[in-house]
Image (cartoon, rainbow, N blue to C red; front, side):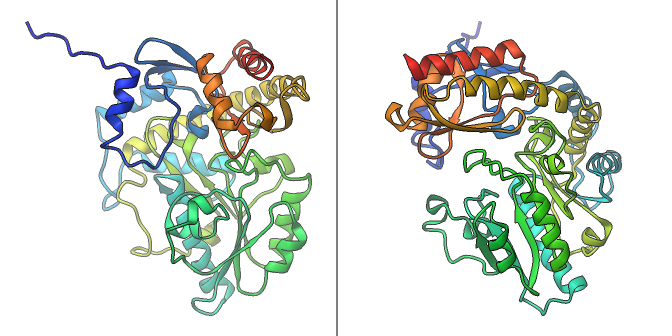
Amino acid sequence: MTAPARTRGTEELIRAEEPVLAHNYHPLPVVVSRAEGAWVEDVEGRRYLDMLAGYSALNFGHRHPALIEAAHRQLDRLTLTSRAFHNDRLAEFAERLAALIGMDMVLPMNTGAEAVESGIKVARKWAYDVKGVPADRATIVVAADNFHGRTTTIVGFSTDEAARSGFGPFTPGFRTVPYNDLAAMEAAVDETTAAVLIEPIQGEAGVIVPDDGYLTGVRELTRRAGCLFIADEIQSGLGRTGRTLAVEHESVVPDVVLLGKALGGGIVPVSAVVGSREVLGVLHPGEHGSTFGGNPLAAAVGTAVVELLETGEFQRRAAELGVVLREGLAALAGRGVVGFRTRGLWAGVDVDPALGTGREVSERLMREGILAKDTHGSTIRLAPPLTVTGEELREALGTLEKVLTS
């Protein structure tokens, strides 16, 4: 009889990664081996409440039954054809996603960064073909403290030196203005501007929610200037803020919406550029592509995600539980919390620096059975799965109180 494989513990597995994995991450010292719903379990059987949800990639929790069923069903039939051929899942995915977002066309990709890169290419092509910007003169206005991905083009217009340093030279054609500053944005927009590209809520920056009217102002400004408004909803979209899209809080309709993370249900990477026929119609065969974009497995899972969102249940849950989250953080104001911002089930929490860095607070929470992650300085973010219960959410807030006040 074959002896069972020896199970390696947390410390041994972490040490095993050191010589073979590139050191581009600094994860918390927990090794997850199983998960379901809002809970994960490490290799030693300890359970943790997941208050990060894969940076919104797990909006529907770990292994949501409907999504797992859709993936299993498709795995038994067909997984990949490339876009050299049609597949029988892509049309329904595109039709239902376009309808959910209220737009005409979908460009399916894989990762969020790919969606952003694709949006940039589409905006430039539109500027040359439709707006009439002279060749190679198109500009795109972006916001300081943005996070749109990690490719060389994208980090080139980041203001985070940790993301930029050592990776130049960078792609030209971007103008950076302060976030939440319409006057600065208006000054940066001119006849060469193809698009304004912003996050409706800046996630990596600390869940920065702009002033009321800012998104409306961006929409009005881009209309006057004859350029596109591209909303990066990769983290904020698909139910996270209590609406399908964060821009809906101001009843704003961008020209292009970038989606990812939750669109893959925590199972496969799925992203999309969604827009009007006038904008996405500028692409022609051979001008852009992806071997895996729109593959049958991704389309099947993506369709199941859209089906969950079509009911409105998850948007309502995020809105209702968002009140619990906001009230719980308000009760901690002055008791270790020096500031916070929430929108739906998403919060940036500024901890008193005297109590530690965001990393140190996250480590203390981990030891108490709660998984969260820092952003910058003494700020942590909370973004539980939209399947979390009120009781679980209050448990997490109680643990945060314990960590900050004990």
